Image 1: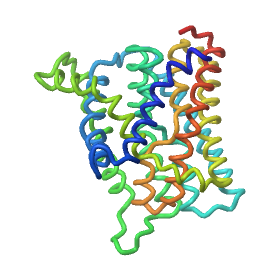
Image 2 (image 1 turned 120 degrees about the vertical axis):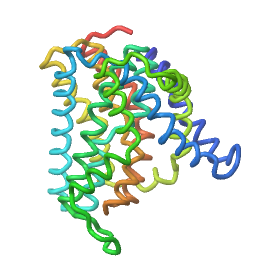
Image 3 (image 1 turned 180 degrees about the vertical axis):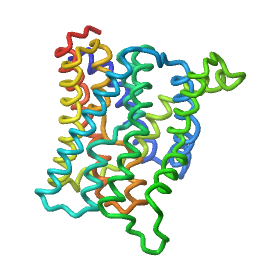
Image 4 (image 1 turned 90 degrees about the vertical axis):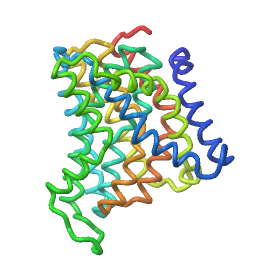
Length: 317
């Protein structure tokens, strides 16, 4: 476990360094929110396009991979909804707990996959992200609108299909994945200039992403934890990876494929959950707490989860 922890440690050190830079307002006030936008709209989409345009979509592991991740998503959703029902939680808060349970931080997942398993791990993680990002976004929009509708009465209500189209087609990560898969399916090995440019951007993405995620953390949020935080963290950091491990064992997936899949359950929830909660009437303040505390907890839980998964599947680094 020590070796694995030391491999993952630089990733969390970059997160902490980003938080320190933001706290010291270095290099200037307002710099890191700008980097956040650059990463979300340019750098990360470039990396997703580059990887999905090169991944082997004819791989026989793809259907099993999709089944494993879908099983875990459904299982965790049922767990969270049951917790919220028996806890008599309000619907806006329930949808934020649901987001905290099923969303995953793509940036950290791909960074850890690359650090632990190299290029092969990064390609597998990109494939997993290509499956989960659109699926989770569609699922959450439908869930939030179905459970409590749009809470902002000052704006005209939109139909569910319009909301889905808006959320999917304004998401640069989904658009990049769609573009990369389209290029891949068309059999185009290299798009003039675009492949080279996105390849260069892809190499610079992960370090910058980790600094930006770290800069978005707010230490104050760790003081506001409650029982819902415990349940949402349990769903995200324990139930999700455990369900993935069970499904991978049942389908007898390759150890590397299984461990990369488990990464999607071991990483904290995504920072984008706050924006969706605010837009569709969820409990945005509590979502912010979930994001910050889960990221802090994952410093300990992520290496432990991956160590246990290596033991479970017999993977040697």
